[in-house]
Image (cartoon, rainbow, N blue to C red; front, top):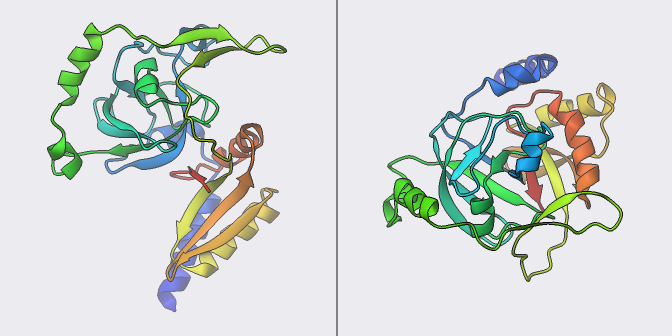
Length: 253
């Protein structure tokens, strides 16, 4: 019982520090990192509009991620169709906090990313990882190939009749997916801790749709949602990111 009380007190203290700046949040670096969320496909116009503050070569196998060191090897998986590839972190960049990364057009094309639902998983890798051992090609070999082959099948068009928005046209998945997601805030060991967090989010931070799901005997997920469209999820995400949680994830239902 004493351990539960100590755990709850520690967690309350951690939440009370949630008003730290986003800059401090970006200073954390993860060795073992896994995150599911929406990615942003790089386009030159995003740089000129200052939505992204660094350029990314269209043909590169690099990504921007603000929680990993430069040159960290990662596995990028399109969670809609299961396609994946190896990439490296090209460094940090200023980009909208809603996205877990910025990827090149080449990565987007190879993974057949649908810009209406650019849902990916980023996972760090190491030499002991069986995925690395089983790969016939290394990242550097793939990079050499990528640099020699022009990016084909990518086209910028204005497809909106009401808005002047430039959209990237990529191969679309033939399967019709229902857009339904939650924002996972934390998975906690004690139900009491989950209830405390939920009540604080509801009462002190005036958040909506906060729920708890029992994942297993000793795992309780605190989340917000579900969301049936991207806009509403982005609005709620902006409120959550201010609380400086360590690794917020977007989970498809």
